Length: 103
Image 1 (cartoon, rainbow, N blue to C red):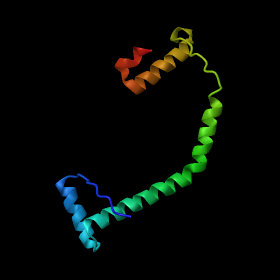
Image 2: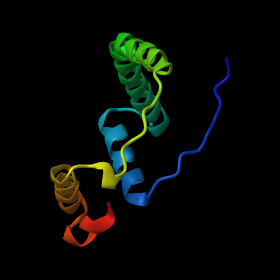
Image 3: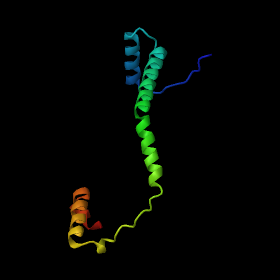
């Protein structure tokens, strides 16, 4: 199978560092970059395999939850005074005191 060439663009300082590391490893830049890419792909594949069962469970739960009807949220005016104060405190904490009246 013939090799297919493609170009990678980077800043000159990164290019110089790659050349230096490739030379230190006794490799040309192409071989060094291929080795780095293959190593990264192996790590990515290992992560995918590690989380495959969890991802499947999450997808199943997501699909199961799709049949649960959403309930409407109460209006701000329908909240108790204590609940309204809590909303103001949370918004104030999250957005800053000037945005506390957004609710």
